[in-house]
Image 1 (cartoon, rainbow, N blue to C red):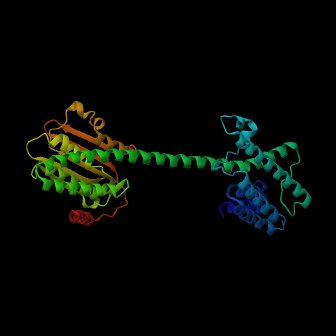
Image 2 (image 1 turned 135 degrees about the vertical axis):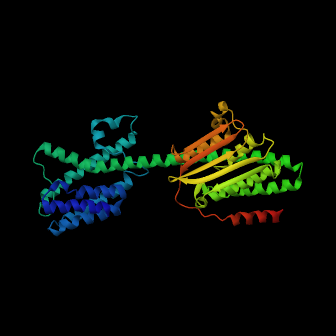
Image 3 (image 1 turned 90 degrees about the vertical axis):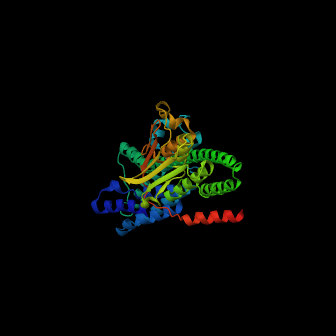
Length: 400
């Protein structure tokens, strides 16, 4: 419909204004069939002939339809098993298409064949126009050799230019699809690195706890099973912020089981409107784990972790702060590169948001560490019901 309307408009302009150069009905019918097959070629050929029939050009209908059908026939023969169309008569005329490193010989032969067919159809159009008469079939009749050559080249370009645009668009779409696939594979690889890292540390906690308090170790296993269920039940790159906080709660419960219920205190300041906002999966857990493992465990007094989440200029800003031993200034310069957890957080943010994110770590030895993450808010909310998590946990206890 789109191609038919475009070329039909050219015929109408030719009839109403007498501007013959915009009447590309025969070339358009052939091009439609060549690109999309015989049915589309037939439809476009019928549409472009309607205005011509209205002024008595009776041969326009059979000629346009035949051109569309012939183009559709070439679609199945010329481009069989071929995803791309390389046809470019200018390239062929200049000889560049014959370079072995440019296109394959079979493609060159097809392009030469198509160019010869287009030229032959142009001669057929000129012949029919002279035999039938301009009152029954509109054609441009060149009077000089130079005009004839220009007419033939123009006819070839009318077919070639849309195909070239199509080819470039096809290549851009293909490259974008491959880039998305590579980005997703890279993101999956990063997530796969984080999960074994987290699992290894948690299993160490279970091993240390089971020798001291088997009942508490059983509780830790249940917490771990809930975390693993949450991780494995979805392959999405984003999950509701509320679910991310629930994972952190399970992780901190595991740490309290090892170091004592009163050892680790958590303070939360979360904007309630952010609970259903999508955030990258397992974004905060490595940061909290880093605070516990490298900042709090080395202190003997009570440890406090503060988690704050707020909206700021259309962005989500999350701040995780602890009162641990802090980070040495020299190590702070490379802390995001040397650790698996923090380096993966930064790399995943880069994959998901490009350069449109902030990931800053501030620390003062003896006073603690503050980590701030900021990235654009996604407007689509993801449904999540914490009761489903508790229900799964009760089922785990029942299985036990």
